Image (cartoon, rainbow, N blue to C red; front, side, top):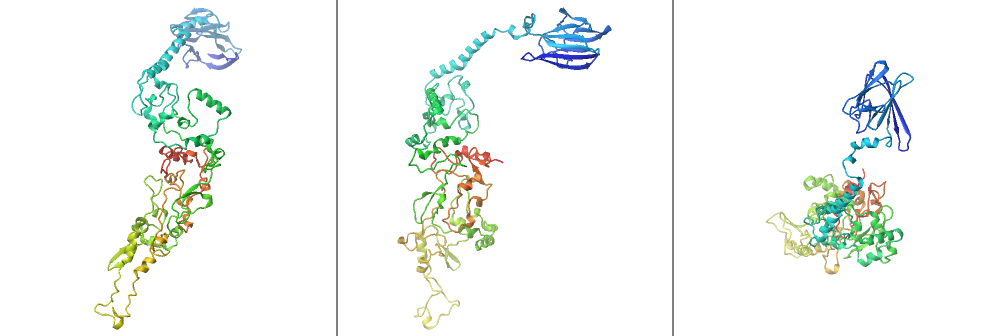
Length: 583
């Protein structure tokens, strides 16, 4: 039998949407099951509610498939006959199905949902809703509000006020009941142990975390600068920012300059995010306009507004204290050594040939390379000082005399002992090649013409030691001549040159040394082989730089709290450097 199924839906604006589809079937099932030919999504309708089957004379037979009946032309029935040519209406749940015959003879079934105010629909459907089994909405709303206030406000406040007052503790469980419901998010990994101890930080109810509470655990933290300089250097809030701070102060929020301005918590588990660039730029962008006596240059963005690097060097030969100078002035570092990098790295030099002959047994490959002398520290951040005995003596021997088959070697680093060894060099005369024979006449030992010309006089050996090609002077600069003939300038190998920032070599292992250090063109140890600002900008730019290989905020190289003698970033920031590198 041919059916034309038509559904009429009404939008929220009252517009009707009519959909039609053709169906050829021997019977049709009407119900709440989506697999039915006519699907009625209403809880008052059974899964398979009515079956329509053809009957003699072009009529249809409608039968209820369950215990619930339906209405046929206003009458409650379990079954009935329908003549589409005359028209009929079936009511089931909130739906009405109208039957008619189309111009082509097909049976047309039009489905529409009854309006809410149509007849007693609401009353008939009330038994199928939760409202018939629950209290009214207003009653439930008031009851829910009271439960929430008691469980999440009254109980935490009461237990907080009546608890034993103790100093904030890092360990132990909190004693305030139900306070976890007030948490706005998980704590970072460094504070994860305080998840169940809210009062360790939130000492007073409805009062923001104070700096004194943070210092309970972080008592050794250093200040960024002196308090008066910080106050003067910080720009005054204006306009909307000033309004926001006035509101914040009204709710007991400390600042500006409080710990919580920078270190925000409850932002999810994991690492605490480094400080945003804008936090630093707020003060340092125009710092010289408020601190006229500062030696720091203005800085706001590494890629666009950052001063040239300043390095701490021994600027003059013989200097004992380092000075911070800009790399733009091409400073020298007089470290007390003579060492031409270019000769040692030249693949055609005699040094390279010697390294090749010594081979792998001495730790060399096809010539010298940076790693032949420079050994990284265990953490990969810096490099160990170059050691004479380990890195140099394979080629630069300190042998100064030979007694039979034994070689006499100077004690490196002990100038007084070296001078004594040179003065005590073997003075015995050279023996003849043939034993049992002596020189004749006045040329014999003890004669007036006898001379041991094959040996160097100890005084001459000592005096020439500091010549540029002498035993010591080949690598060392002379010291103060007033202290003696054998005076060696102190050797100063600096672990750090940039005192207000850090650099982690381990995070740059993908680069060649020559990318940043022009050692192959340096002919003097006083050359400062450090990359300048422009070199670093090849990869690093500001925090918001989209085209940079490594978008870099201030916190990647600078610490707000100075750490005495530290060259590397704090572990939580150093660990992020790799993740910041874009593919």
